[in-house]
Image 1 (spheres, rainbow, N blue to C red):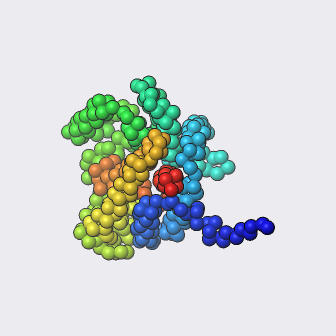
Image 2: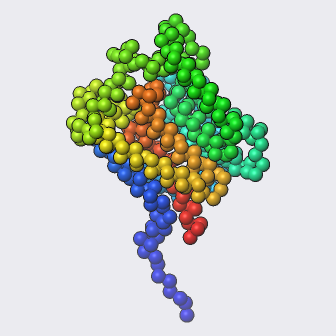
Image 3: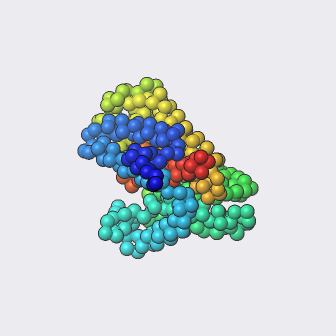
Length: 384
């Protein structure tokens, strides 16, 4: 006599798809998404359909996060080399056939217009983590030199476009992988000291080297202006220094408790340029003040801490390096954006995760967090 098996219900078939998700990470993502929506409602109130579009972009990013979280890290590792190769090939195609806007050749028409450099924010750390996984247990100096070449190729192509902001983010993501792989402090400390000395010399000689007839090696003229504006934005308060000055005024005018939701005068009288994208933190700080800024920083800190915990508990070299690089890449986004808005870093066009408007950046964020969730989720599933 045959045994009858009860057919599982739809709920019973769906539940395993959601099992193993990292609850603290998911909660922090949802809280930050909520803050982003509230901020965009106010900052984008007089800016067309920015709030609706921001919500749509978040839903797309969450869908990508959910889908990528289903992919085992082993399959992600198999995608590393193809993604990196395709990304570099698209960067080369952009240099040859790309679309130029405002003096920058960053876009490529492949039926739809894409910005290939965005792909390298994920593909580069993936490729480097794959490389160090292959060299596990037998790392030598030549391995780090090859890793440096792997990193230098996309960074050089992106900087050439020019797109300094994206080049910095790709460089940082790759550098974090190399650092976690075991790069010696004997090599790191001299570079840090040289950087500190260069910055000190730049600050001390700011007036002289910022003269119009002084040419800077490597950097383009507009990049020189950004650095000189950082040193003294009041030299051109209605031109190149306007962004920095208005950002600092908005942050300062928020005080301790802020002016209140929808009551930011700098924001709604349109004194803050790019108030829904690069300078959205200035709009947030004006309305929610030091208290709101502190809460936002705490949420970001918890997110970074959770990401580093996932990296520390990752079972393989590949997953550990990748999780660490993605987490510290988020730190780079946060630090650079808040730094440039508050006047301690040059303006380089880096979005603030969850808060800034932008479809491509939100998709990249969802992809990165999806990989982080995949690493945490599959470690849990293996343990159980």
